[in-house]
Amino acid sequence: MSSSTRLRVGVALDGAGWHPAAWREESSRPTELFTPGYWVDLVQTAEAGLLDFVTIEDSLSVQSTSFHAGDGRTDEVRGRLDALLIASRVAPVTSHIGLIPTVSTTHTEPFHVSKAVATLDYASEGRAGWRPRVSGRSDENRHFGRREHPGEVDPFDPAFQPFVSDLFDEAADVVEVVRRLWDSWEDDAEIRDVTTDRFLDASKVHQVDFEGRWFSVRGPSITPRPPQGQPVVAALAHSEVPYRFAASSADIVFVTPKDPASAKSVLAEVRDAERAVERTGAPLQVYADLIVFLDEQGGETGKARLARLNALGRPLTSDALIFTGSAAQLADWIVEFGEWGYAGVNLRPGVVTDDLPRIAEDVTAELRTKGVFHDAYEASTLRGLLGLAENVPNRYAAASAA
Image: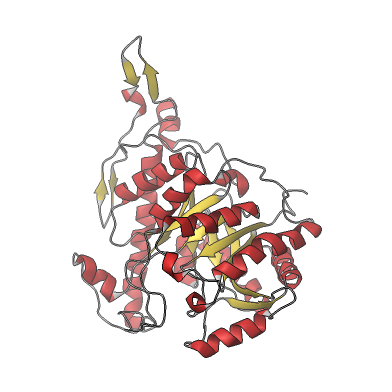
């Protein structure tokens, strides 16, 4: 299998699954959602299927059908654990799969984010990534109370868009600061020479001296450069502003096409965004997010499962394509995305306890028969698994050597 035909497959984890009624399935484990064992089991299942990575959802407000506030529903999962801390818990009990937690950039400090993700990279021995997420809801803002907010404005109202643009501009600055802090220690800054009483070469630890609209950060980091040098930065994007954020700041981007036609147009929009921001280096790797309800072998079809769950409460709606069908049919879809120019897919299990094992066992088996998926992990880092450059130059080492 050549690198050009190899497709990457990840799975997006969010509570009991992406359907609002997923927790009510017989197989689900709602009493365990806030236990470490539950998350360890999910990620180990994904790793047993040789999936490339898991993403872990997070936010700074309780889940809601309303954009700006809680909805008062008690028939759906509410509450979540911190995604980055979940990833840190599962890191020592996994060995190959990439870990990409969601981290807010709006009410958190980039220095803390840098240290936390670098620590995850150490805990996982080079398998860390993170997905910066902006926090635009008014209730999220009220949790912190440190900035102005336009109030409960329709998020699609043109009056709300300057605020959204500012959030993404701030997120871009956060990513820039985080990347600089990761580079603030050169790879050989730690000497650890007992005979000369020198643990550190101070000339190889650098200030980052970032000055921006939202914050100024002098640096250096207090955490040595992560094992990957630069852990993977991922973005989730649905429209022009986040496409440009991804093009300027991320290594990979998750998008949400609705059908084959939009899959091609979305890819074109991402490439347009790269040109608009004059991206340099490797192009963005683009992954399609799909919600999946897979057929049960010899039992209920994915379509019937979705209809039954929809009848239990709030029907599932999404800006992403909702797939129902067999593992073979899903594998055909994934191959098509690869032919259109996607690097792979990030699959959102409709019911995680049912659909994740079918993804890990049946879908990957189908992809292997098509020659587009690996039969063993071929790299020890997330950057390596995704085919990204592994020896990322340190900007400050290069400057000091000039």
